[in-house]
Image (cartoon, rainbow, N blue to C red; front, top):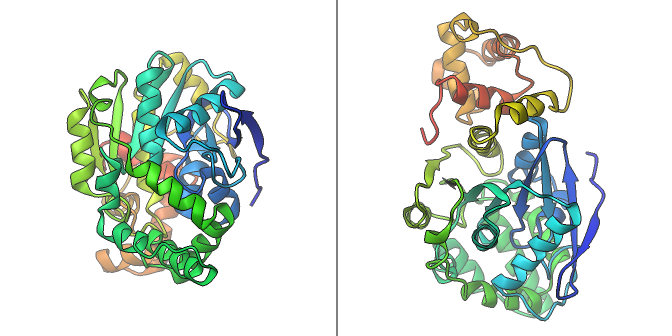
Length: 367
């Protein structure tokens, strides 16, 4: 894996913020979640971070990730951890990159920062994507998994190790013990018990009730049932408060495995729907990786019935083995169908195939 180099921006209150960019094309900036998006990307192979970042960059987006203050490679001991302070982090990165218009996204705590920023700077935010958002920090910390994990917070080294191990495995939905342990190690590298306790306290005070109705940009709200730090009720409550927000459910099998495919396809489709014809053409030309053949207008009809069945299941997040079991065919047969349909639709992998299925009506967002 090529680890992107870090650069630094300085906030208006003097805090140093680490960030990186990957890909080329129109920019999408992710407001940092807890523990630092740049830190998590550079520290471990977690597809929930890597898959979304790499998938979007492969589709022609310039993706920006950074570490929120107090976490990762950003300044570890800033005096202010409030939502306003986190917005200053984002403002510093945007200013450093000289971005005059861009798409903005945020996951969980990062979604709160993205909302606050978009309300203040609506003229330069083209579209806003909120993944697993919530209205108030108190509601977020009341979620069962997070409530139990947070209740174990302690300052001693042994207690800190136990707490981070539990939190890491909660983050991986207890589906991959090795990944859970890697996330735990990344958490310990990113912050300290005292700093995390202060960050939690500041986060619990966040309330977006008055900000959400003031959003004046197109908004997509995404709920992922597999994500342990969100819920359908919390996401729906957010969507209901935002004028004309779109709401989708990404139903995929595993946060540790393929859950990022639906995110990438949903985000890509939403953002492209707001891109002008000239910009969209530039996006297509700026796709990274080897060139792919553009599918003809007859491509959809050229797919066999079985290939369409395989594609819809693949785009829904099933593995080749799961597709084989569902269709009662062998794994090699699935692999053959996948290779054939990739060739027909001009896809380099699952991300391209999922986006193609969405655009051609074979898969509906939230299905």
